[in-house]
Length: 337
Image (cartoon, rainbow, N blue to C red):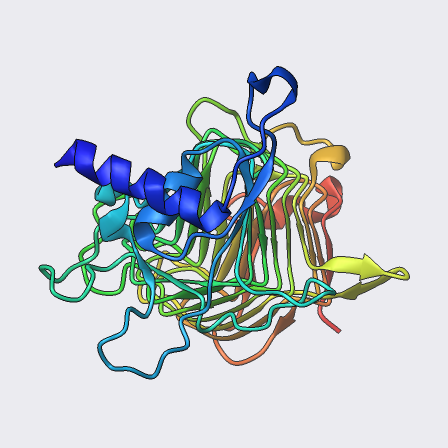
């Protein structure tokens, strides 16, 4: 059965491509744009190094019996979701300017396909290469959205994460997260929406590395998150929001977060990595509404919390157990005007 499935997936991918162009001498396949129309073809594309741009379709049929998504049931290992094993851009429909045109209908689903036993298989996507980009489609109903362990340069732009980890008990990372990254530098997560995550919206972790460095997280909207909207508790040189003409702008919006007394809505911590200003994390123009615990928990020398607005929720911004007494000496900057 495994051989039959692989052959069929390859055949479907070839059909989607139309043709593969060989490099000189026929020794290698050139980079190509692949347009899979089924889950089997998508599985073949994520394992085909020539597919450097993978264009997903929008499922627009009004027929009740029509397939409405790519399902991870068709992945080589469903429990891992679709495993992208090479540098590539995976994107939904875009216009000539690169703007999303049908994000809501271009869907990759981590739940069982109709007719199969119900329940989430695993993450929607597992990243197994550096510099993978996701853009302009929806990841829904997986045990997690994206899981990345040990790879740099993840780029998430104008994505929708919907109800990942919504039903099953969380057994450990990455379960329940919209995006979980361990040992990954240079991550960009911008202009995306997260709704109904069963654990965190965005979470960082370390194993072999001492820190995750150089993340940019801005203009994201996160709501109805079980734990933290953003749990970047193992990060340095991260920027949440940005400075535009010297003014804080383009922050993240978190609405309704946390169910226990250990879950700040936005949590950024350098874990005392170096204590140097060059490694400080910076938060600009972020907004939290309705947090179970702290709206912001920020720890680290020289951290900046500028015009990050606390709305309805906890009554404090927390700088960690041992940081409050050292704020002046360590150069932390706070402004919520």
